[in-house]
Length: 508
Image (tube, rainbow, N blue to C red):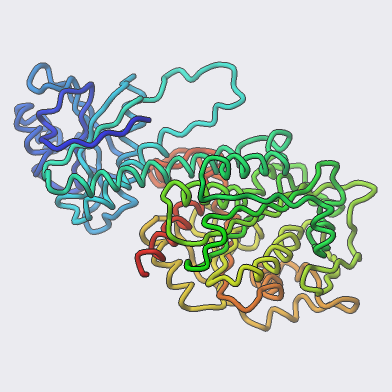
């Protein structure tokens, strides 16, 4: 999508559609909306007074200018209550506007920068949120469909800012918003892509393509022989049941720069999870193609990091494999030895994600990082605890890193909730034959999975994000569901991680 930024008054813009806004409960439009309303002879105010438009979140009303304005149509979007307004409300309003523009068959539209005026947001942050919401709201997975959609997407968005002095900030925000949203769309594509298309080797090709596009980026793809030489017994134990070759992806931004701080991102890359010998129920097993959503988020974040050219040494690690039953598959009762030498008794082969993460977390130590963050669709227990589509669970061994993630969550709108990393959970994974088991059972399952991962964490600040309830959207359309989310892969974690890294740079 082409994104333009201009200075001027929205009511003076000539376009197929212009977009303004209104807070819920406001009886008389103000600002740019008031100027447009005046040109329309009070039509917007009449709609508000008559109760036809209330400014609620997700609400949108179309007015035809009939020559009163250079634009043909006016779209007013609701921002919701002003006391609950923030960047996520901007994303939501922008997504609602973009969807309405597509439904109207509009090829080009212009919008005010929602929140940059009475909303109290900085022009840069508001512009970024508008562009993110627009692109994410228009997302559709079309790769494998022969028939094009009924309505094509708008090709151009123009942001109109009244204060010319803030134009550089709006331009910077719009650019960042486009980069971040496109990265989220990549993560969504990867999670939506069927497992026979998004194989481990195909994920490696995505990583190699990213590395080939940017001079600051390099990629190493370790095959099963490489992993065996390193001693990645946990990762290879999961992989041995599949005919698809497993790969361990290492993608680095600013590799070799010893003058920069290092942050490692680890993403679970199970491209299909049948549960292995501990076979899952057939219902919704097709959704297990998205069990690599954490790995997809890491690859997409690395793309954004390169485009933003952040002055950090960022490493993305994705252990990628399928988990399938076969005559060669690992079994309950087997013992695997991880990269750090610790032994693991297998209780359930369906608790495979923590096994591949174990070797990746141990591998992270070689980079001597300032922080390591892993993302994984790890446990149904986290969905039970926090709900689907509500928040991801976060565990951390470092209060400073947790605070950074919470701040990034507030800005990005990708919610996380801290959960305890108590040593008591070690009792749940006690083993008679090995250092630990890979499953502690249903009770406290989210905590025992996190304490398991901690056994492979080196001497570095670490946070684990269980994104099982956030990676795939299945709820029906409703005002409660953000307008920028579509059914299918959500790309959760990309905006959070990019914001974390941008804040890291800003903090110096």
